[in-house]
Image (cartoon, rainbow, N blue to C red):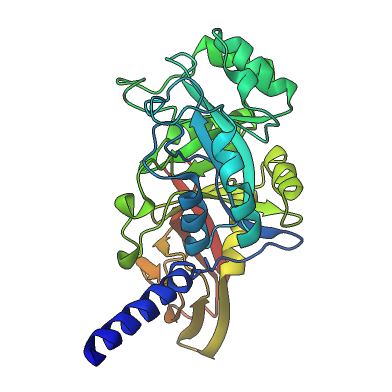
Length: 363
């Protein structure tokens, strides 16, 4: 009898511990920029209220555990395969998890996915007041309804091979939407797919770059966190940690995209972001060269590749700055030189298709 009671007590203790274990938060360690907070955001995900496989509150739990600051549940307007089991209006998933998100400190953005054939394909409208008016026969009326609510609208996965199997094209329909103010951004990365064409369009057309998970199953199905994987997300540089702060930053294109081991975005944001991630100190200098200490204080990896330089300045061809690691790098002086420019490209900080961030350390 005593053994049975002990087993029951142990079980109850274990069950009692589960909520606290489930809510352990893993902070994503990336720097703020001067005057801005770096918010980690995912504005594209699904639940059983469209074609996802989890209840809406699960998305809040996942976001909290992973260290996200803001999410949007963007259920398909036109595609609801679970409708026989779950019949509700298009705002319901947001309403279900609004209180939980608030209690856990997750900023919840109301959104929906306009799901149409190509063209124009799929788009997310976020910062909606009501998703139901987007349920219309003509896709133009859906975009118009979103715009009337002053939504932020972005084109989803433009290179999705189910809709563009041969090449990623910008269609006349997108030009019309863009000219009417109905495309404010594009997903440069969606899940495990990166679109260099979307990066190019964002730069040329001054559109906001987004990275999203577009998650349908439980998040751990797509990402192995034990191996250091992470969901694709958007770094939003906001003046404050609030929905208004996020919206202002999106409207002003202050974003970078974190995809696999790459960070993608505008050079004018990428350079100060990189400089906030690392500390460079000179620890020794003599006539033979300089020794630098470079500390990577972030969760990010940086892949350095030597570019054009004075051949009398001798340093690495390629070098990787691992996360949360101090690196000691020796630069040699030949032919009597006493310094110079140490030039390299950070090849996984993508500022244009097939172009990394060029950087110089002056010695």
